[in-house]
Amino acid sequence: WLYFRYSNFPDSFIDEDPQRALQELNEALEADSENAEWFCQRAYAHLLLKNYSCSIDDAKKALQLKPSLPLAFMRTGMAEYHLKQYESSHVAFTQGQQLDSSDKSFEVWIKRCEEVIGKQTENGRHDWYQTESQVIVTVMMKNAPKDGVHVQFFERELSASLRLPSGDDYSLSFHLLHPIAPQHSSYRVLSTKVEIKMKKTEAIRWEKLEGEGPESNIKHFSPNQYPSSSHYTRNWDKVVVDIKEEEKNEKVEGDAALNKLFQQIYSDGSDEVKRAMNKSFMESGGTVLSTNWTDVGKKPVEMSPPEDVEWKKY
Image (cartoon, rainbow, N blue to C red; front, side, top):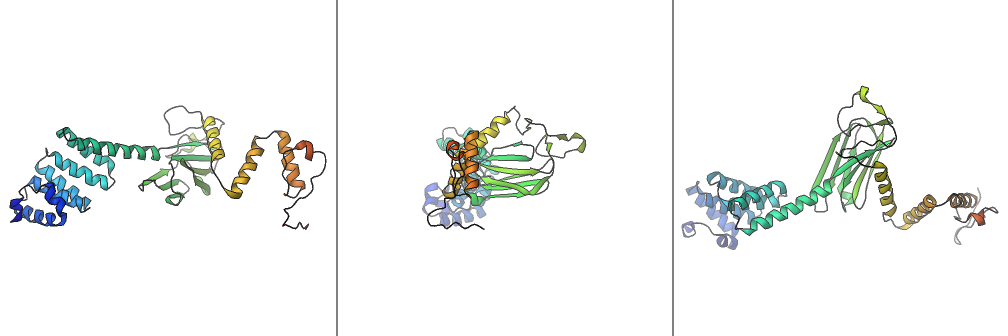
C-alpha cells in the first residue's frame, strides 16, 4: 500500500497531486479511522481542492481524536476563512497559536481575519435619528454598489440587504416601534453611507427605533429631541447640518449638477439674490436666471430662449 511509504502523508506529497492524495488518505482512514494526523492531512487535501466544508469536518475529527493538534486548528481556520466565516476562523487560529506560538503563520492569519472583521464592522455600523415627519437610518458603507442595495419597507418592518465592496452580504432587519408609510419612504446610496428615510404616519417622538410602542407612552414630537440607538448624547442638530453639508458636496453630473449649483446659489444667497432669481425666472418664462437685483429689479425681464429654440405663447 502506497500510504505505508507516506505514513504521515506530508504536505509536499499532497501538494503534488491533491486528488490522488485524497484517494489514498481515504483508503488509509478506512484501515485506521483513529489516526488524527491522517484526518488532518485529508483536511489539507480538501482545502487544496476547495472542498472547504469537508476540510472543516476532517479537521474537527482530528481535534476530537487529538485536541492538542495545532495543525488541525490551522486547517479549520483556513477553510472557515475561505467560506468567509471570519469570526470562527479567528477563533480557530487563536486556539492554534496558543498551542504553538512558534508557528508565525497563526499570527499572519489572525491579522488577516482582524482586518476583514474590522472592515465589516466599520461598514456595517448603523445609527438613526428623527425629524418631525421622518425616521432616518444611516448605514455606514463606503462605495457600496448601487445595484447591490435592496431595501424593503413595511408598515412595522424595515429590512435591508447590502453587498459590501468585498463581495460579502450584509443584512439588517428592524421591527419598528411605530407604523410608517412605506409608499412614502425611500433610500439612497451615497459615497460613504446608505441613507434610509421612513415617513412617519404621525408626528410623534419615537423613544427608540424598535419594539412595541404602548399607546399610553406616545409623546408628541418636540424640536431638538432626537432619541437614537447610541448610548451617548449626540448633537443631532449638528448631525443634520453635517448631512446637508455632505449632500452639498456629493458629486453629480450633467443637468443634475447644474440644478444643484442653482439650488446651492439660492440656498446660500441673500434676500436680494433670491428675489432676483425668482423675478428673472418667472418673468422670463424660465429662460433667464439672474442673481443681480440691481439690474432685474428696475424693469421686467424679457424672455431670452436659446438660439435654436422658438418661443411660443400659449
